[in-house]
Image (cartoon, rainbow, N blue to C red; front, side, top):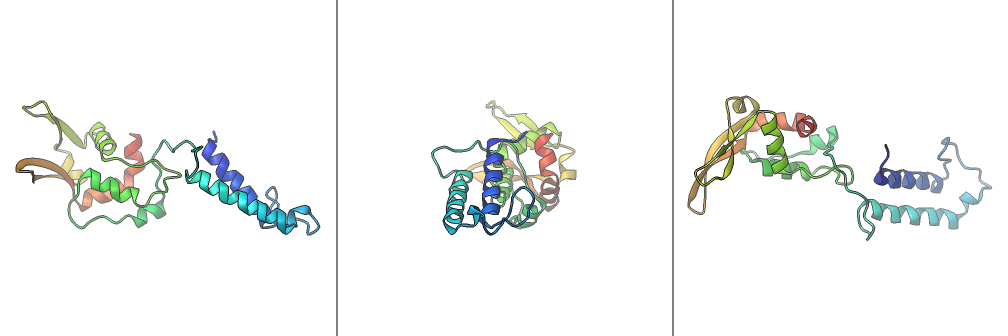
Length: 181
């Protein structure tokens, strides 16, 4: 089922083909005598395609629906740059969001990634004495590249779940499946 965003993108593609003298139906050149080859008409098509670019980018008052699923291409995955050290899920999500096309994919959040990893049994939860729910590692976590490190924030020590290089590679490779689990 085609959504509104896809319709606008397709309409822009059709206009660009016509503006470049190509019949969008069969890919053949448009007859030179056609009104579609008039420079005034061509300028009009390019102007409308620029307006559609702004609509697609969300730069209008009439925003298109935002994507509802994470989508990352192999090319985008190859562009992801992680810090050398162990990182948390929020830092992982930030690295992914730096490369994905937000016109085609929703942003990744650390909260959602954590939730999915818990569903898969890769991570677990614990409730502390104050009733706070904490994400923790379990017996499976190490196999997937997750560790626990002591951290300090404002004088309070806590355990933070971190992702090592094995985990970064695993999550990146399987990200879409993890988010659909």
